[in-house]
Image 1: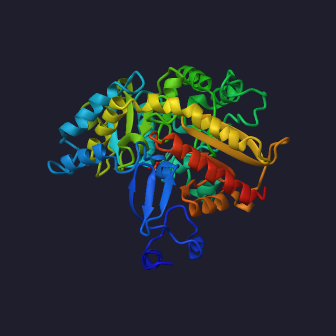
Image 2: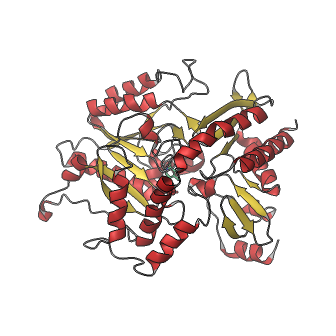
Length: 448
Ligand SMILES: *Cc1c(COP(=O)(O)O)cnc(C)c1O
């Protein structure tokens, strides 16, 4: 352990970690970064194929984003956002209007993903209260969903690892069985199916639609559940059902937005719009903590009245609309356009996917290989015929993670699912390298 690691462990309680694991595996102290490369204080390089928790969209230390923030820093670093505004936030909204699903047009800022989820839930609840439906006080969400870790965001989520312990504190959510595409009970494939599993959702709406304010989804990709993917047809059907029951559709595009799925937003694949869309992560390219809950004129109007009627949305975050975050977010949009980032990522996606299939598909224990945009996931199972999963006790993902770090690749699998979610600028040479390392580490851990 070096001196910095000792000092780190003296003071820092790291997120989502059993700190005892750090005894034999101390934190890697990163000194600087460029593109997809992280460099530690000894100069060792790590390929960041998880985009540093899925937020780094265009590589680390992108000079255009850095310069945009520096320029902003010299004119305005922050200002109260109630009654005050600034050109950078306004410009960002103008630019986003060309990119977001139709009908979304009002932007409410916060500073992290979970906060934007909290905001969306409160907004929906209050909307119904103020439009004559005070009985709509519940939320629907999918099994194995992930929407963040503040209490209401945690409540709509359903990953046991994060949620189970806190159940006594959480809202009572109407839970809808997620599309289970690898183990599809209808024996279909999510790229060609007609979302046959939607009938379960219809049943839930029949029973609970009247008391429900909103249904929240991670569109097309349940990230933390293990990069589980499902059909855009599901979203299309869900839009129609939500309309029928006057239930808001909240899109958690925090992980899927900004080209990760091959289109600007995952909802674009379905050709329908949500009522509230939460964005964060890719929003600033992963440079500054910022999020936005974007909603419709209709929802906005339900809060618009004389102050003493008490209909305003009395919700605030100190750093709402932070100019540094907005300056980064504008430059991200400029880069996406100027450098055809999403188009180019879509050209690379089949190459990456073929590489992964070639290297992994013949291995024992590989149950499923799935992809969406540049996101690729490999699900390891005990028995590929029955699809019986390993129980997490072997900590296969964690073992692979440690081995890959040794070889200079930051993979961080989810349970028994190895995945890649690299910055969209990754090149072919790096794709070869990281998939070679991943496959050799998987073989070592699985003794094959
Ligand atoms: C990361 C994430 C969140 C939470 O965002 P934080 O900034 O970590 O609070 C919510 N939903 C999804 C889908 C995410 O990937």
